[in-house]
Length: 451
Image 1: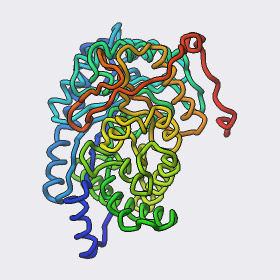
Image 2 (image 1 turned 90 degrees about the horizontal axis):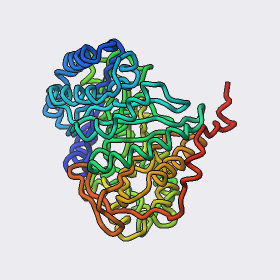
Image 3 (image 1 turned 135 degrees about the horizontal axis):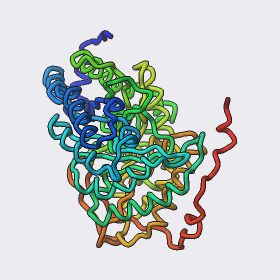
Image 4 (image 1 turned 60 degrees about the vertical axis):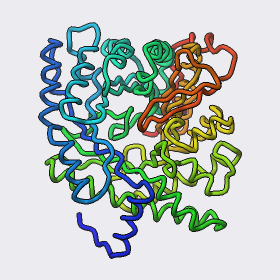
């Protein structure tokens, strides 16, 4: 694919990179591990390690070369693999912690930032392998540094697996007892997608090719800068400005993706145009919403502003690339966005408002820190609410909730790096234990019957 760029566009892109935090947030190589299945756990682990190192051995160097030659920051280089519950189903093993250790070792050998795919897909029920993986999560996530995990427990077509919801409430609680970082690497999904390059929820879906390159682009600072030029204008102008900006951001991502694909000899999959914030000042989704006219993110009007932003980002992206995929939209991780952090600390942004915002944005309740004494059934109920939003609205939703041992409302927790810091947010009182104990499956909505 070729691009015709004039000098003005080149200068504008340089300014976006140098002053407005524009970057390629991640190049993620997806790798199928289906051919690594083996009844012997040791042989399975050996095959997994060898294949990851063989396929992704040049990923980091290639990303660095492109970054240096094009002058485009590429923040992370990552790997996603086939959900391990599928790969390990034939293994004669009771827990999959050794596989998690193997993934961690392979990630370190290749030099990537994270590896995703220690995952299970159980939206309609558990296989024995799903259960083994889920029960392995607390130990696996605490004993590894770079392994990310996810569990898809609901979909519009299947409904909500409430047995999985209850189990994940207990698993998250148990994981939190070993430290907050384990929960920071664990996402619970409804309607998970197969080509998401962003962690912690990335996995290589069974419908994907043997290997693939997916790129995630992020530019909240670029959008914020563009909107400052149209203060007081109508929402029609705001939407058009965001669309034009998203087009430019996506085009840069497509260029990097195609180049990485060519150099690695791996098919290009998608550009995920997600406005993924960081704790850095000027790289905030909350700031974009406030530039639209809100005094503080979380106040009345926030959901409407976010809906406009998310839609305009998608419309601009699909005009720039025929292969926009993944999650594509605006992320609202509380700990990773300076504006969200400030609003949460002062109480303007609460869990209820975040839940409302997830109806119109890319994912869900992300990087939410809660008191360490939160009950497992309360965590499960939060997951159920978010899964219901995804199921009914036919969209991807997720929960990355982190009970922080020894912390309570008013305290904060520092995760470091891109994960930032978060205030401990309050949850509603009142037990959901009887509700969660019912188990079974919440049926799929009527509009799931589309055939």
